[in-house]
Figure 1: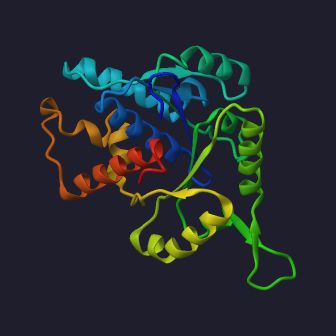
Figure 2: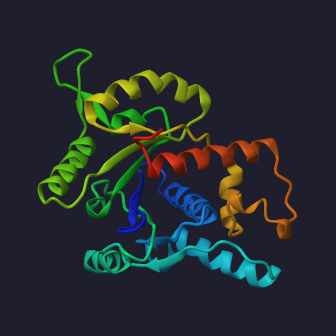
Length: 255
């Protein structure tokens, strides 16, 4: 990431659980802020979006408990107004190190905001998730072809390259229990070479991350002495996973 010249725009997209986009975005934003990066978040679901509610609750938590929490700059933009998003990104490009945008909650998976990304994070979270990336070739046994989603990402990559705008780093994030991640590991790495994405370190689902989000907190706030929270081994493990993901998302070629 060239943090001196341009903001690194990270889009987070999950097909099956849109709220997960915001959970990952919130933890990623606070982690990068903890690392002294200047971070902005954008909610394309408007002021009622999960990420916007998180920021609102977080601000209130600060006031009620009289403590200071790392707070990314937050921007609310209607998901239907692409011009507003483009205008904000152009204005913010030299002001931030990273801009994190969870995909909005509509069922449409072919997102126009992908064209704004430096890094696209596609989240896989269940046993059928591989069908998002590939599908059987008609009338041919055991032969797979790229899915419509994969082809769309490739069209975005080609468009950005032809316009000499930027290179899109495509990252696939397994968000799965250990058994499922292990079963899919070899196949995922095999098709990654064919489809042109990098496989991020797995994040294991844990309820505590969602519970904290509803309080306006993330895993990276729990070492704040004012909160008086004691980190369990499970929380420490989750924090390590999200930190590894943050490093990977910004520098997928160096991990």
